Length: 110
Image (cartoon, rainbow, N blue to C red; front, side, top):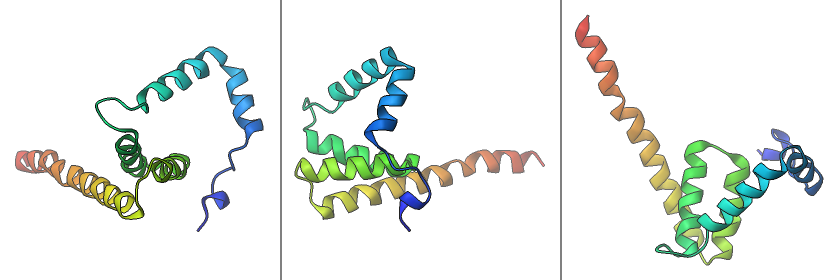
């Protein structure tokens, strides 16, 4: 299923309208985003692979599309992207299982 059937398509017009509603905020966010994704201790490709994984955990379809494209542009292979998604899947499943400790503690009270 295409996300376009579920979510509005991103357009320059919509982006400009959103930016106009909070120009200082969008400028700060764009600068922050640019800075975060610049090469540093981690190369840009690695940062984009992390973003792909996080986008899957947060389930942001716009982020998934954008950061998958950016990861490819930064030299990530399709296999690397899929492996990052599997890491995200394990972390999300692991977190659900780890939180079972909370349920266990409650069950022990009864």
